[in-house]
Image (cartoon, rainbow, N blue to C red; front, side):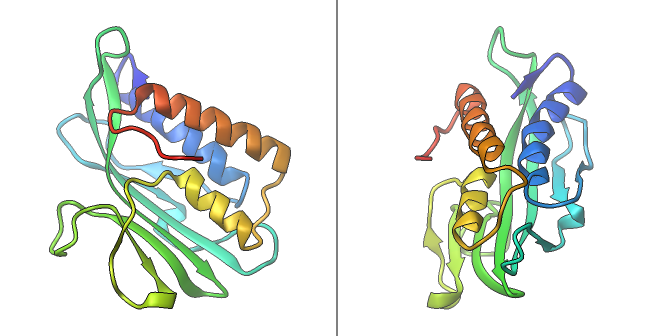
Length: 173
């Protein structure tokens, strides 16, 4: 997502994430950097597990790392690029699915991957995952957005916006 200034690029990055998460839970997306030379961190409700609407015991924690980088000609001059994430979906306070990508870490696994409680601590390669993918999985487990119609519209819109600016491609909806 591009912007005229570094701050505008970060705000354009945050907005669709806040809008999506806001349909499922009360809370705020916060970031800690608006500077191109500093890796930033985006979190929802301080990165803590938040109970999602629906009363099914579904919770989610969201943390992303990003960088502000030059955008392609005619689209910027700035955009935000995700450089890592941790999306942890819980059910009744127990880890269910943990989507992680931490390319700069002490872990031997630097590719995007999934930890699934049903199969232990192994790393299952996934390709990159959007927060919308995790929210759709949460719906499968009983989370309910404020408006399903609005969620479907927003999911489609966010994917379209993302596809226009993604440099790594986009997976299936």
